[in-house]
Image 1 (tube, protein in one colour):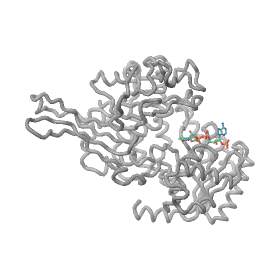
Image 2: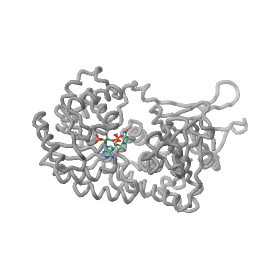
Image 3: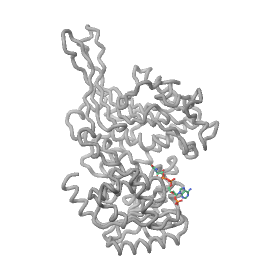
Image 4: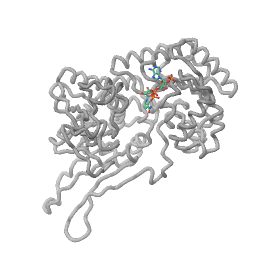
Length: 513
Ligand SMILES: NC(=O)c1ccc[n+]([C@@H]2O[C@H](COP(=O)([O-])OP(=O)(O)OC[C@H]3O[C@@H](n4cnc5c(N)ncnc54)[C@H](OP(=O)(O)O)[C@@H]3O)[C@@H](O)[C@H]2O)c1
C-alpha cells in the first residue's frame, strides 16, 4: 500500500461494524479473519468496535474463542503471527438478538452506544448483512425503525449487503425499494467479492495503465473473448438453496456479469465510484441476450450426472428434486452492441463438479492477415492473453517465436506474470480485506450499484424466461470431474474455436457429454 493510501487510512474516522449473522460461516471464515489481518497490517483506524449480532446465545468471551478458531483456521495472518490478538479481541463483542424483534434492535442500539463511549469511537456505523437473503427485509426494516439509518451530523451509517441480491429483476427491484425506504443509495454497499480480488482490479490497471493493449482491445483485433468460472466442488449440502437458484442466478448474474463489464467497459475519466460504475452499466446495457432461435444455438444448460455412480449426480443430492431441470452448468454466447465490440462473441461458462477450480478471462486476438510462413506448413496459433484469477493470479500472453536452428519453424510460447512470484506469496490480500476497508473509507468503487444489479438481472431473466418457455436447448448432462458437457464444446467448435484452460492445464481431464 502506498504512503498516501496509508495516511488516508490513518486519518479514517473511528467506526463500529455490526455484523448480523455473526455466528455464521461467512463471519467465521472470511469477515473476522480479514478484519484481523487488517488490524495486524495497521490498516484500521486507531479506535473501532466489532459487534456480532445473531440468535445463537454466545457470551462475549465464547464468541471471541469461536472467532479465534476461525482466524487460526482461515486467517491470512494467524493470532500467534501478530501481537494484536488481545487488542483485537478486546474490541470484539456479541449481542444476542432475534432478527424480527424490534425491541432487540433498541437493546442493540443501547449496547452499541455504550461500546462507542467505552472505546471512544464516533457514531460511524457499518451494518453488515451476513445472513440469508430471506431475512434481509426484516433486518433492514428494524434498522430503519430504530433510526440506525439516520446519519448523525458529520458521521456515516452504511449498509453492506451480501450476494445474492434478489432472485430476478422484480425481487431485486423490490429489495432496492425496501432498502431505500431507510437508506439512500450512497449508503448502500452491495458486495460481490470477485471485485475485491487483486486480479480483477488489476484488469483495469492492465487495460488502462498500459499503452500497448488498449489500441488492440476492440473488434478490429480481437477474435473473441472467453470468461470461465469453473468449480470442482459439487452442490453438496447446499442442494435446497441451489435447486431454486441454479448456476445462472448463483454465478452468472453476479460474478460473470462483473467480469464481462470490466473486460469490455470504456475507460472512465478517473478512479471514481460513480464514473467507474457508469461505464460498467453502459456495457451491460449494450449486452444483447440471445433470443428466439439464438437461444438454442447460443446457450447451453446442463447438469452433472455420474454414469457409473462413482461420482456425484445432481438429482441425487440432498435437497434436490429428483426430476430437477435446474442447470449446474451453463455456457452462453453474448454479443455487445456497441462500436467497440460489435460482432465479437463473448463466450461465458460456469459450472459445478468440473475438472478444476479455475477462473480465467481469455482474449484471443485475430490471426495475422497474411501468413508469411504458410509455405513451410506452419499453422500459427493466434496471439492470446489469459487473465488468471484461479488457481493462481496472473497473466499469460501467447505469441509466436522462431525455433532456433535452420529453417523457419515457429512455436508459440507463453510470457507469464504471476503475482505470487513477483510480489511474494503473502502479498495478495483476501478480497474481503479490501472490500471491508473500502466500506470503512467510503469508497464504493468496488461495490455494485442499484442499476448495475438491475441490468444484469434483465440479461439473466431474459435467458431464464426463454428456457422456461421451452425456446432453449434441451438440458444435457456431463460427467462430474470433466470439463463440462459436449454441447458447450460444440457451441465453440462450430466456429473452429475451443475453450481455453490455460490457467489450469490438467492432464487426463475428459470432456464428455
Ligand atoms: N459463506 C460464504 O462464503 C459466502 C460467500 C458469499 C456470499 N455469502 C452470503 O453471505 C450471507 C451469509 O452467509 P453464511 O454462509 O454465513 O450463511 P449461514 O452460515 O447460513 O447463516 C449466517 C447466520 O444467519 C443465521 N441464520 C441462518 N439461517 C437462518 C434463518 N433461516 N433464519 C434466521 N437466521 C438464520 C444464523 O445465525 P443465528 O442462528 O445465530 O441467528 C447463521 O449463523 C448469505 O447471504 C450468503 O449468501 C456467503
